[in-house]
Image (tube, rainbow, N blue to C red; front, side, top):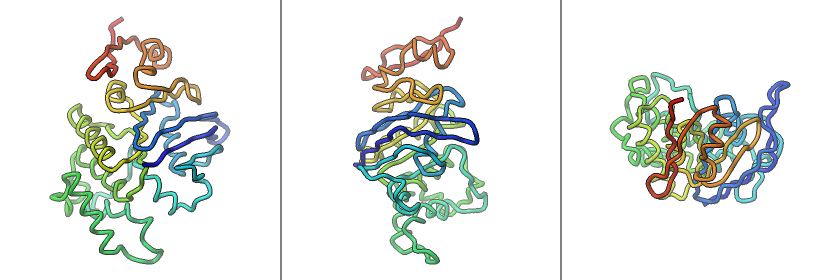
Amino acid sequence: MSRVEVRDLAVVLGTRTVLSGVDFEVGGGDWLAVIGANGAGKSTLLRALAGLLPHSGEVLVDGVPLRRLKPRQRARLLAYAPQTPALPADMTVFDYALLGRTPYIPHLGRESRGDREVTASVLERLDLSSFASRALGHLSGGERQRVVLARALTQQAPVLLLDEPTTALDLGHQQHVLELVDRLRLADGLTVVTTLHDLSLAGQYADSMMLVAGGGTAASGTPAEVLTEELIGRHFDARVRVATGVAGRPEVHLERP
């Protein structure tokens, strides 16, 4: 299980400071949910962690500064699934998931039998084996989300970064995807960092939460400490009631004016 530490992270895009002074830690095998209003910088944070955006500050996995690593080495530590990935319509599910093995395939080389076995195993775990030869353009929204997750998991990285993994899914598929992530996290000892817009879902699954606002960290702690009526009202401009649900986890309910 790998621990993630972020120290004084800042991202400047053009002349605009999107994030500054971001500090947090995620224990090995834990799940951190990053929440915040639209445009707060949640996706920017994950892209910076994945090494896809220039940033200052330090990102460490088990004490190793990622800025010192080459992209292929970094990809063996962190797997990133974007919110809206490019899915070539004619590519098969198997070939797309196999792309996750890229950090292990030699330059100008081909995937090995072991790479194909890892990919087949991941598809089986995600109940996607029967879709292996199906083109990506013929999948439903829920199936596409599982395929994006499959590609990330074939990297066999100990840290999983998921940007809004439930986007555009109905409630049932949202729950299915998050249950799947949770089972895999517990089975494989993965450390998970997700952005989630549904506050109640975030509160149900995450071990800890971080609220991003104003370009930095507005609050962090357990779901019960972050999902408060006062914080949600201030940073989401919403009137809500927070109740205690299953296992003492917070549930957020909108209140009519």
